[in-house]
Image 1 (cartoon, rainbow, N blue to C red):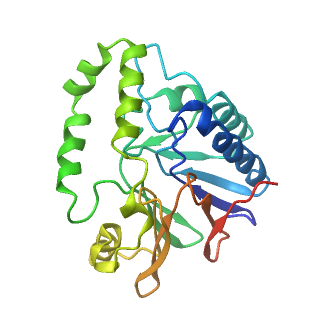
Image 2 (image 1 turned 60 degrees about the vertical axis):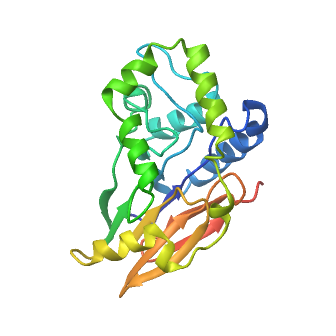
Length: 250
């Protein structure tokens, strides 16, 4: 690393509950991107940037031009951006890679910065429990399911998916604003199990919508980044330590 910093953010859920109501959050997130690019060695986006995303062969969901334009600008300036799909944008394919030159990851990945080892991902479906979601994810990520959905006209498919996302309260819920205790926080348990076979200094995840920073072992910390729906929190690694911060508009 140079003397610059690495930034992390997750769970913006742009487009929810409507495009109009999420527009102020999009502008705030774009302002954050514009602000941190001055110091950024790299930027990690850990999923659910969009409340729904599906890539047809020649069509992507309408909107989000400001955030996509800002990401393109930052990437074109030479700053690496890494994107991890979440449970709301798991149908992302190669649009970001081809149009923005941003790699897309569908599983947690290991990175090392300044001799600190990170395991980074969105966090959905990891750890014990949540068996219902894990079964549902297998259905949604099945190539046949994606093929079937692609036959829906985008005006129908996108609207249906957006309706179901909001109706089923997949953006947030009571569980997302309460700490459940270490024994019931599945990502905490997942992190502890990973430490049994390999050391990591930091486990960085989103998905829970609740900012958390928990010691899970000797010199090992689990961090949940929170969200940009109610908390507007993000993470920053300065080469020595990791810190969770709240972004307040300038």
